Length: 144
Image (cartoon, rainbow, N blue to C red; front, side, top):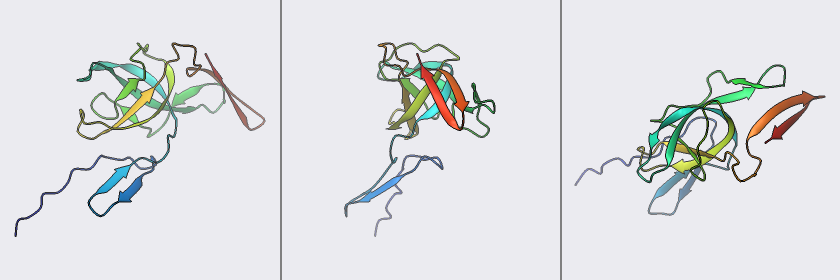
């Protein structure tokens, strides 16, 4: 009897959520929902095989004052090799830009790692965060 080789599965980080689907022939693991993560672009890493710019980023959280964002302790980091981020329309994103990221899926170009996407709002979509305020336990987020 031949020994079956293990199947490589996409890596999922704790807290991102996962779905498990079995159809009798295969098990599919995916992410649940499209939870938005606030991140700061830290630079570009190069381009993917499909020609899209790969961005590095770090997860941010609302600062104690509620007026701004700060680096999230033990947050997710996209270093170019893992947790790659792509701008949805392949528009240029400036280093330091605060953006909302969502899980795009597992990429074949980066060995099944989770990919993220963001929209810098070049078309006036209002997806770039410009300020955050907390007033009376209500969080107000303003977009450009």
